[in-house]
Length: 120
Ligand code: 5GP
Image (cartoon, rainbow, N blue to C red; front, side, top):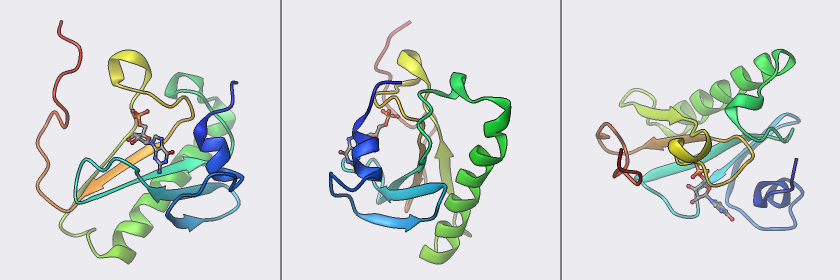
């Protein structure tokens, strides 16, 4: 898998506003927030897209949701609610090919969350 900007955030060669880190995952603020609170939870293991999640990765991907929920509780927005979503490939709006859970919060979120970028 080609190295991405997120590999550099994991190895700390690029700075990020890190909110949580353990041996499996890293959470950091999104550089271009789409809600009052917007951070990303990523596995340290590079997995390019949701399509590349293997059976052995199932607990790792569950761990990303556990980190999202922990931060939501710690940061005080769990009860009001939030969105935790992964974009996949072009039609999903994915731009960085290292899977990441977007966690968006801090206001009522519309659905769909983004303006259509691709007209069908
Ligand atoms: P995607 O479009 O792949 O679902 O989401 C990629 C996200 O990564 C975007 O929300 C974008 O703002 C964020 N992002 C891209 N480059 C950087 C960076 O260098 N630092 C941080 N903190 N976020 C980034």
